[in-house]
Image: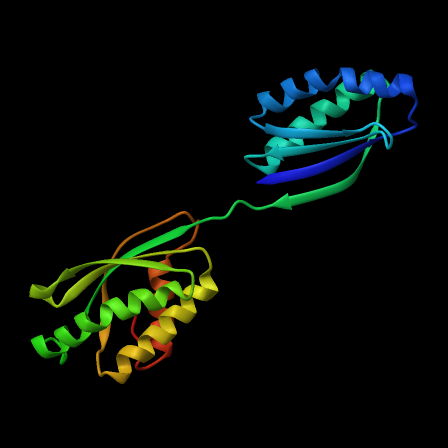
Length: 207
């Protein structure tokens, strides 16, 4: 996470301000010990404010570092007030890989070729939802391993629904065969979630 924090010196005087500035190196050492990277600082001498731009691995690291910095400042008779704090979450990319196969009654060359012809259009369509799809086809088993990269679950569910509609209109029905993997999120089972959405729409299939 990226944090932008502005600290204002309490009861400012030129002497107290100079003391605070001289302590920045010591503060930096504390940040580094807690694996916090300081991108830059902006110092406003007129307002007695310092704005720090920090990259923080977790809120625990920031909490522990802030506690130690507070002790150091207090010992020197310095106190500050946070007058601005912005947190920007680092974007997360989720990757789901699963194998889908033509459903019973649709496992023939005619339906397979219809599905194969539609695949390129479906992959381009995924881009409209901010998703990227790659696939490995297996004509012998009328199946396809599909990997989807996405950052928004709502967009992913919309892609599932509208892709399923496109396939149903061409009488192409597929079903999940195997989950290969899911990464970049702590969740019980994205495969079950996708399958649940699929079951909620009778003719809905993924891709």
